[in-house]
Image (cartoon, rainbow, N blue to C red; front, side, top):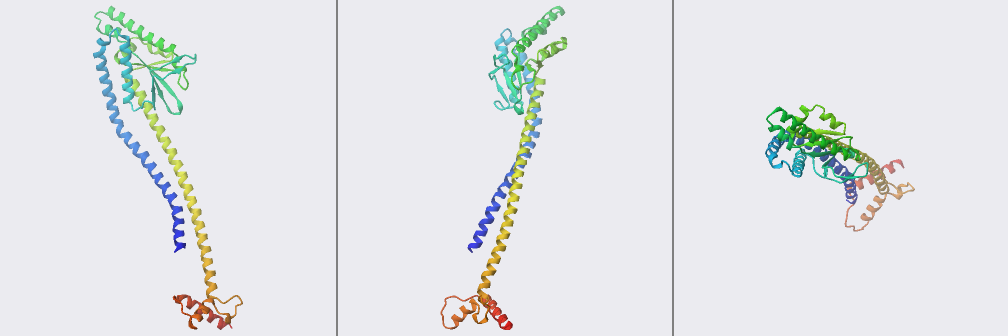
Length: 332
């Protein structure tokens, strides 16, 4: 029984690590594919949210035009608030996928504080800064004559170029691990579209200064791309983890086979030891003479001579000993 217990414990020691690694492997695969299914199901809902956000922001911008008119600080705060709302709804997480108003140093050693730094896998980043130009757009929109419209349009373009020049001088594009451009976000989309339609060189003007002009629609598309990149990165990490677990599982399996081989050898050795012990009991003594008899035969003779044991030698052992002695008689 002790041998059986030790054997069972040894089997348990071999099988438990293998079972544990199998469970980890199955759990990781389930997590990966369940996550992918949930993300696909959520994509349609997120796209609907993006459309609703854009519509709501356009309505809010129109309503706030009068309230914000002439107050540049309020305009800036409102633009940053709209940008933050987009980031929250894009599937990105603050502190993980982006940093709000973090302090950095540009290549001139100056301390700068971009509105938002968007983080990408492998330590890459890009920067978004919010700008709002409402006053001259509102005047342009409500102007009655062509001459008046042209005047306020030129003023609006001048405001936008002033924002571009100011942002370019901050040299955000020189920060570590950033591309050589910065996104300048206009929350009031219709103002930017009007400027780009009537001033064909405006986009190029910004691009030459390492600035890319974006509205709610174009920024949402960019941020959704970033979210997708992070999703792919997470899946890549999951695949790497699955491969790692698979390697560990394979190693455990090899170890299991090695231990099985050792167990087999141990069983063979135990069998040989058992056979040797039995031979000592049922075969003749070392000198090989029949008169010496077998140990079993001698023990049984003691019983017949009057010894009073409390137990009986198993009949199968007695039969084997008797057969051994009969064989010796025939050989003699």
